[in-house]
Image 1 (cartoon, rainbow, N blue to C red):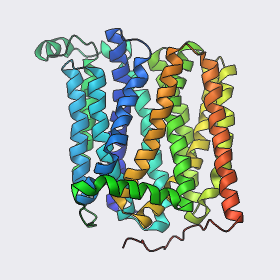
Image 2 (image 1 turned 120 degrees about the vertical axis):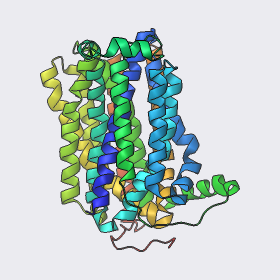
Image 3 (image 1 turned 45 degrees about the vertical axis):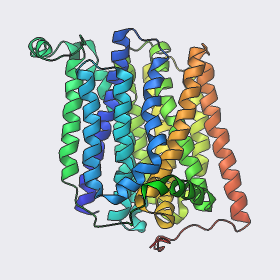
Length: 422
């Protein structure tokens, strides 16, 4: 792998760590303000809405400028969201601002992967990028739990004078927020160290962006390989984002853990996911990516076992198994989707289409989860429902894919394929 890719990986990990630690700290801030329980999913809802609404524009932005520079500016927006919380600002507004930064960051990040590496290396590269991305989600959640623990909030002797000097809005989470802000600053420094790939694309007139985006979206869904990979990753990220909240509630209510302990339990999922992602990058090639589809069914069947577990030590192996299935399942699908998107469209535009669909799935399932939580649906039914959704939806996608394959409608892309938009 080139040196620039390693710097990109480091920047992605630190930025993702800060994003997800910020989520837990912001949830704790809502608790501190006495907000109702169903407000917590709204944080992720506002964050994700930015991906959907800005998708037609951020892809073109990523292609119009050096992608490392776009990442630096986007990371600055996320740091600004953290600073807003330090100043006592509204948590929902602050986390939505972080979502705007993240929406602009993603097409530049993933687009740079396809520009720095040849198609034959994309599965291996996605093994590492997904380890860093999803590992940062889980480890960042654990870090956020540690930062909001009572011991962390009282361990800083410099806190009282600093709290008097800053307009903090009376929050006791100042050490946590300043730690997250420092991570965003570090990520920005790493962004500046990423080399320019040299790739340039024709600029699109602003008035044509919406029409072009609609055409790009339809083109990727009509492509057989693009359709199956886009359907799978949309399902995976929608369910995964929602299960993050489900697992936190389950650990608190069924296992009797505090918020910071519940967040720490997800380290088991992170370790399993790292193992699955590395294995996929090592053993699978791009033309064989669709062979992992049955693992999505297995992952869905594992989720309902949470309802019979009552001890944290028994929960860890289950979460590790779910993580291993997820890592081995999503990495080849993501690599296949990136390759087809880059082949059919461009680096930034294809990732914008991917983000639009995946985050539309996240929005739909988070809205459903928030509504069911507000309606008082038992947690066990929620867990069974999401497990069944993963298993049944993946089974349907697999059946459709096999039917297309048997009819000769599906042809796996070759690693040395030439971009059609070249």
